[in-house]
Amino acid sequence: MTGLCLFLLLAQEPGPAEGTAPEIILEEYLRSGDYNAMFRALDSLYGETGDPKYLSQEIDHMVNQGLYKEALKKAELGIKRHPDTSLFYQHALRLAFNYGSQRRARGIAEEMLKRFWNDPGAVHLAGMVFDNLGMTEKAEKAYMRAQELAPDSPGILVDYISFLVRNERPREALSLCPRANMLVEQACSLALEEKGIAGLMNLSGLRYRLQLSWGLAYDKQEGKEDAKTHYKLALEERKGDRSVSLKLAEIYLKEDAPDSAIRVLEEALSENPGDGGLMKVMGIALYQAEKYQLALAYLGGAESINPDDDQIHYYLSRALYELKNLTEATREIDMAVRLNPSPTNLLYKGFLEVYGGYLEEGSKTLLSLADERVADAFSLLGAAMEIKGKNRLAEKYYRKAVEANPSDTGKLRKLISFLRARGREKDLEPFLKRLTEIDPRNPSAWYELAMWHSEYGELTVCDYAFSQTESLILSDSSWTNSQETVNFLAGVLNNWAYTLSVRGGDLEKAKRLSQRAQELSPDNPVYLDTHAWIYFKMGNPEKARVYIERALTLMESPNPEIFGHAAEIYRALGMEDKAREYEKKAKEAR
Image 1: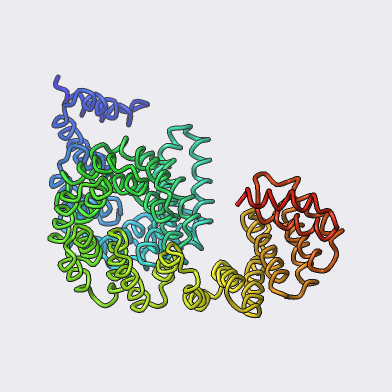
Image 2: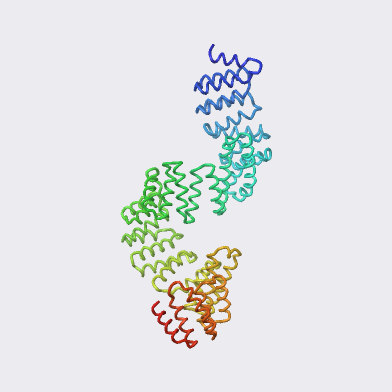
């Protein structure tokens, strides 16, 4: 008796074996790899019984064997013979969308939605297809209906969240994520209880999709810390996942944390070896980490896979420049510009031309940029001139960069740093003042202005700038949580107090400020010295001696200013020997 005849005979036997023997025979065909026999058997079973489950199984096995056209024909046959069953519409829709015609998929989805408006699985699938076809309104209508029919389905809600994120509606997505997470975890707990680890593994993909969408939503809302948290959770479900790893690495690179990006990318590359996109971002991360030789290796590998990616050539150029290979750096940036004459590529090309001695060509390249990048062009010209030691031209271009974009604090600070490095502190006041106008909520900008006026300017302006600095620090209710901020405020109060004492200001106010600085940093010898000097200026050398001697005891390295103050305080007390001793120490320490 042939296997097929045995199969049909068993299928017709009554009693307890009914419904189990066919599955045994099918398993045997599967194990032996005799798929044609299995398809014939399923055809015969379907023909004998008319049970749609056998036709559905045949479709599934055909898909597993890559017989997509044949599977689609069977699915359409199922629709014809079982028009009131959504199962074959769903088979046909998946096959038409993935392996057939998108036009046909759209037609099936619309027909299925009309026929099975109360079937959450069918409506959900139609929504997913509309979503992928870019039919946003129909997709949302289907997703919303599916949620009405199955409000506790985690899969439907997670797919709707993904839809919202893709359609630039992150705020709405974020409002739904906590509920989705609760539903997913409930489903995981139930699966673990009923099926063990295998059941839990089946839901790992759902967890992954939720965490990825959650991370993307925060990313679009500039909530980078929360985005990182959810990207990491997604990676726990799919170790080394390419898309999540790239997103997480991108955040780390924007935060100037290349070592963190490198760790993420190493794991991603271990799971996706030879991936050109991952190799490219790894090269960028290594460049940012100043590991130029390694950066070249990864960027070179990425370039061999994607030779027309201008960003790869751009970073190859930058790494080669850092390794003092100007010829190769120029060749790579020329290639980047040929592939994409973007402002970024042209800026760096111009910089290399100027640095290489081609001043006219470089200036022409840089100054040909669109108006919005002229400030960057001037700034790069300034940097190139500074490197070449042409300080007059460097200052000229730094100033032009500020004029071209007067609200760019980065350009302004570059000019300030340039002038400061050349001992031009007295020329800084208008630029420091401009910083406070551009960024009036930045305490550091006001502090710089205060310190300038402390040394060179007006006491009233100085006093106001110190006051603004203090107010801005204290306006952040969490300032006490950061030791760095506490130290910053202590320094501000101390320098404010000292300025008042040496510039003829209000000494009582100076004493109060100095006391507050000491409360924040009680054993700081510089702050104790300030307090001593205030008492000295108030005509109380005895009190001044208490604080100056504590400062001398706590001082870790020679400080000529503290020694000088000690000398004056001892002299005021008639202790001439001590005064001469500390005068000598002050001279030796200078």
